[in-house]
Length: 315
Length: 128
Image 1: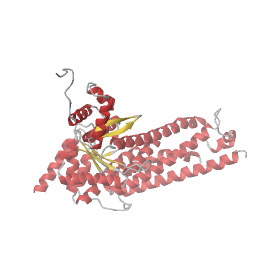
Image 2: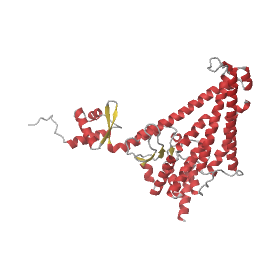
Image 3: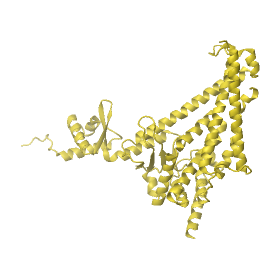
Image 4: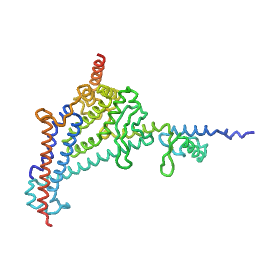
């Protein structure tokens, strides 16, 4: 096992190049799926290894519920790391669990409250709210407790500023979010980023590619990429004054101008997997290799661990 | 001789309008007791309930059960009420983008100029 148990904790770094390059070079649908899958696998492996390190490191702590046999010298020899690392793994694992639980709780809470806010309205797919603040978003449906449909929420302030073609583009964009269940991708990468902070660039990248995916779907639905670009541009400009959610866009152009520029450029090619000898191909294969190594080392460490502990536990 | 303290008899329509306007002044759903108080207490509680029930039959108000009584809302204001509730939900989340995929996110300092340039360029190309 040795050093392999620590590899999955840092292997998410191999996904950074593809997170940067996939945005520009892959079809947004491919990019969203690829990056989400990478993030989920890498996060699971990283968490498994964190748990393994914790078991080894803490087996000898007084008062722990683990069998004493697990801290035998033979076990400790097989895992050549002292209990300092194991002790550090306890708060780390606790932090991961708490952060993930809070993320899930917040999702459920916001979704529930938003659905409740709309209860008095007619049960239509689009809910138009009379509000002076321009905004629009896709509110995903709920599976449990009534099985409500997803809805598009939009304010009159925003609709008033858009032409009819642009309104169709807006609705098509939000419907694409609902139809492809983008909320699940976004939640998955958020949980992954909570499990391992090295996965945060993937979360940012997926938030962007999911928007691009919906943009391209909308462009297909209304038959014009320029109409979608204009709708996004107009909506962003009338929303000015709404504070930017992150400070990440200080140096680089923010996601909105990049989306508009992408729509005004050529349509992205649909490829299932990029060719190897391009920068994006290398990055994608690099990330895939990193993920595979991560999966193998965490599986290897887990199996080794089970075998050692099984041998060490008096039955 | 008429007793000067006796108020002129008001028609049903007038009472309904009074109750409805009182309800519209409420910030959200209101109870019959609140409406009665708002009207200065010159209508009996049962009268307020009767009028609200009649308004409910006409579809002018809606009600929802709150505890053992009902909270009443003017029907025409349902959309406005939903908008206010939604704003409350969104304002409570500092990082709403983390939960709901908004159509557009905020613009950075240089984004506005960049965006205007892009749209302007597109407009000129569309004309040319």
